[in-house]
Length: 339
Ligand code: SF4
Image (cartoon, rainbow, N blue to C red; front, side, top):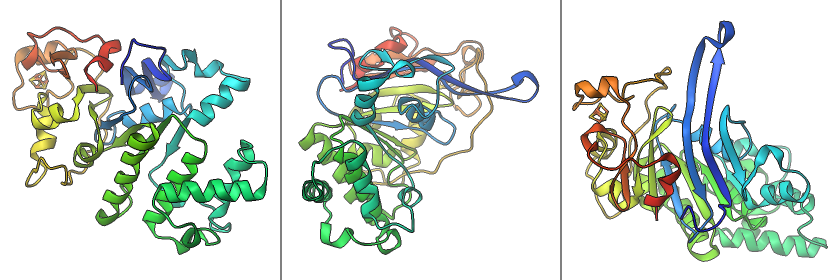
C-alpha cells in the first residue's frame, strides 16, 4: 500500500461514525474516530485491522463497503465520495470491492442449492453470455480457492462443511474479479484446522491474483500469520500500525504488548493462535489516552492529553506518550508506515 502515488482505489478520509441514543442523542458511542486509510494503490497486500469488540474495526469495514454512512469524513472510491456514485462508477465500485463475512451460513438460503449464490452475481453483473460460460467461470472460481466443483455444485448449504461454505463465498467474491476484498472475521466461525486453509486461500489471492485484502479480525495471531501490515485498533482509533514484522516482534503500544503477551508460547514462525475480545466500552472521546485505565505505564500526562499517532521507525507508528519524542504522524499519513 502507498498513499500519495496515485488516487487510491478505496479510501477512508478522516472517517468517523458516532451512534447516538437517548434524549437528543445524549448517550453517544464513538464507533470510529477520525480514521484515514487508503487501499488499492501500489503493490497488492494484506492489511489486518486487529481489535477487540467495539474497537471500530467492523465499523470501518461497513463504512468502506457502503453499508453504513460516516457521520464525519468521507469514504472515496477512485477519489469520489461513494455516497455520490451513480451509473457506471457505482457499478465499478460494486464489482471492484467485495466482501467476505464472518458467518457464511447466514448468506446462504437453505432452500436453494449452493449454486444459487454463485449464479446470482454472474447473472446480475452479466459476467457470461451463455450457461456453459457461466458454469466454466464458476468452476474456475471454485478451483482457485481449492474446492472441487463436483463436490460443491448441486448441493445444499447444510451438506457442505463450514470451511467449504466460507471458501464458496470467497469464490463468489472472485467471480467479479475484485481489486479489493474486505474480509470481516472470515475464519472466526471455522475450526482451527480449517483456518490455515482459508487464510492460505486469501494469501494466494493477493500473491497470485493481485487482490488487496483488508483482513478484519480480533485475532492478532492469524493477522500475523497472513498479513503484510497490521493496524491495531482500540476504542475507535488506531493505536499502532506498521509492517506486520515490526508490530508483532517489537510492539510499541502497551495494548499491543498485552495482545502479544497473552498469546501462549509465542512463536515467530507465524503458526500460533490468539486471544478473545473484551466488551465494548462507552465513549471516552476527549483528553485522556483511552487505554489509561488498563495501562501499567500510565503517567499524569496520559490523563490530560490524548497521544497522537507517532512514527517510531520508518515502518512503525504508535499512539502512546511513551514514544512522545517522535514526530507526529498525521492521520492521512498512516499509509506511509505500511508495506
Ligand atoms: Fe499507557 Fe500513557 Fe501510553 Fe496510554 S499514553 S498507552 S496510558 S503510557
